[in-house]
Image 1 (cartoon, rainbow, N blue to C red):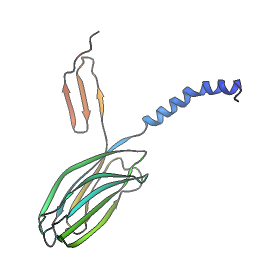
Image 2: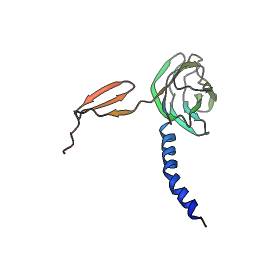
Image 3: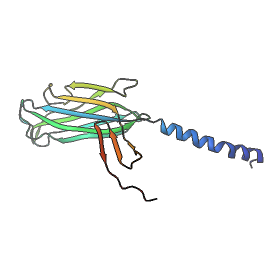
Image 4: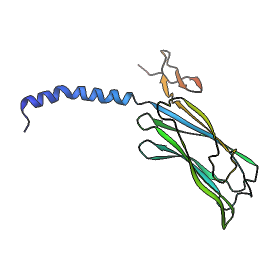
Length: 183
């Protein structure tokens, strides 16, 4: 059974606990990890279920799929470029490595190569990071390339006095009219 003093102290410190938990939540930064990549064919034409998968491995051990797809029909020396893919993550569970799994089959009964190659991100603060990495796709030409960038995610909205809303993001600002509230 709690004494009256314990109850009073608890009631006095509850707002402080709530305030500090809100502060810690506000200090969690959000980042964007973007990969864009080109895969070059090697040897015979890839066929019959040749594919790839790119995953972000988080500090807590979870996996976040970035991209995956078929490589059937990719010829020797031919390069396929893929559109950039972006995921977000927070500073309290950062991405620690990129895992790339790929398989190249030369017939429905013959796998020429399959495997996973990981790229470990540098230890420490990588709130701004930019690198080109080759040779991550097992079974494909070593000149296959992945461009990895990490940037702070900027997703804020400001409301000027005239009621127009400016959406601010890392690629620019756009202005549009919003309905003004009736008073």
